[in-house]
Image (cartoon, rainbow, N blue to C red; front, top):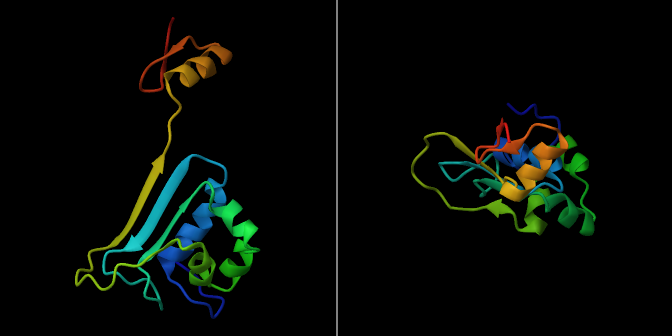
Length: 131
């Protein structure tokens, strides 16, 4: 749920993506939030896509996410970044869709992490087992 405080453009999916972008900053992850009907709020965009580089790209353009969130104007944040998802009307309104993908460290990295914590060798699923 979005509490509308400002008069900007965008919808709940764009606002969710913008909020997530701050949390994903510098991380190897991507998030897509969009409506299956092809519309999100008062815009032609269905939603937006963000990743661990979104905040750095925004900063390079002088965009301050908190100002856009305070005005419920996520659309104007994402437009210059070209991170809006625009599908056009789909004729189907099932639900909002949020996809999140995060990179897991490879086996070598997991093994180093588990050794440094004294837990033995890491399994392919990330849990530890005795060496």
